[in-house]
Image (cartoon, rainbow, N blue to C red; front, side, top):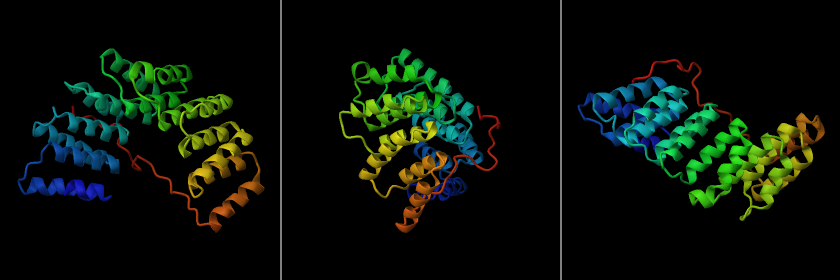
Length: 285
């Protein structure tokens, strides 16, 4: 029931089911805890997440790998990355998913160097990264501007790690190169992709072009992105903002008007963090 509520977009109800279980004397198991921890992550509710962690310790499920992975993810998404790392360090067994979750937790909280260090430690421990792990470390390199390291990891994917680069990996590299101002290098990488570049890749390039004011390359990226998905609001917003940044008000206005005329709606912004995130809360352990 809790998993069903979470799946249907009702994380608060999933958390409530755990409370009802406890009141009715039904002991939750590791699957229940992992589900409710994911619900807390979805709500970025650190208070409820900490309570779940307390239940986990009290009932002796703190050695379960799945539960700990969910707790790492929950703490990281609530902005309490130190608590996430303490859970990670407490684990006796750390499969690849645990390393991957910790790498992404650091990267998404702006701690790119720490994310890369966890990845390097993972390799030293002999744990082989998978497809998702490599997305996470390339994302971390993009966040930190680590161009040289990004190229090293990207070029090692097939030969060293046995992973064929996919669109997500290319998008991370394009974002990394673009943020560093290496727009031409990013375009050259796209031209060498073994598969047709998707919207994600072109939007990454478009975002970089906006950052560095490269209107010509940005228009090209937007044209390719819209040819693939003409109703994607993200492309329109990136292009419109780039034009506005270049003081091309006429083109930006026409683009906004086109969005209104065709009912292309901007997706409302959202944040992982609550209005008063308890970032300094002491960890359970």
